[in-house]
Image 1: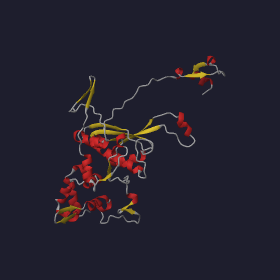
Image 2: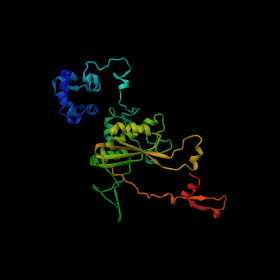
Image 3: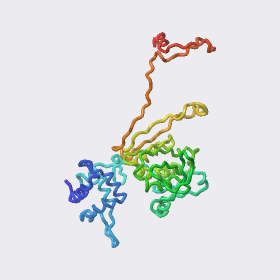
Image 4: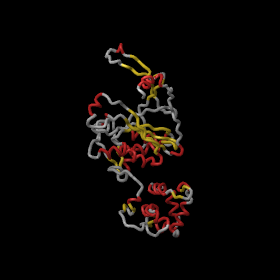
Length: 353
């Protein structure tokens, strides 16, 4: 049985097809938009008198939508579907009123997640005092930091040489020197929703690379640094676009969860292992103390997996038969002149292998 309030909410939500998959309400998408203060959906909900009376606070200066109360109602299946209580008929541990074993949303939280880190990574920034700008209490400073900046010192390189320019064409390839966070936001107005592929090779946070924040908040600082940049990268992608992030084991697990949150877990494409080196030289000297590293990883996400089109590229190889695989036989001699080359197939047949 649906209550009158539930019926009214359903009627309003039915006018927004983007929140439905056939007859299933896409609650996570709806919650995300409400938390982002999507004016269209909030205004539609508050236009209904019963919903407004239940989930709005009327002040002399205006109306306040009780977003968390509304979201709480949406998140509890029993409460929404067929019950007047948000708790099931059992006793157990809860988090924010929800049983832990039913909480399937995994979110990576860390210090300074609610902040913006400018993150100067060049030699010019050495010695510069870095500040975490909180999203709420430092909004004006963040708006100033991320507002589009004028590009200076522009030069064009072509077959005729190098020369000064004062205009960038849509078909120009750009190389920007500067803080990557500021540069990305400067490109946003012109290139938002137009980039098909982003590849980034960020600092790995190994302690010896270019990421110089080796303090007690090292991991969270790195994640804040990445979060600020991945969020704007997501805005730059086309709907069929994708992003490739190279990393190693130092932050790979944390980065995967962060990307699940920013790009949505359902848009994860693959985690590709790439062989980067061979086990030789100085690396082998540590073989008794660690599992030696040969590979790094490419985390791949799409903007919208349903619209992604992949064109696989394969390098053809020749099918070499055993007759052309050879075995070098030393003949109990250290003199290469006495060595012979025999067919591998022949040697295996002799040894019944």
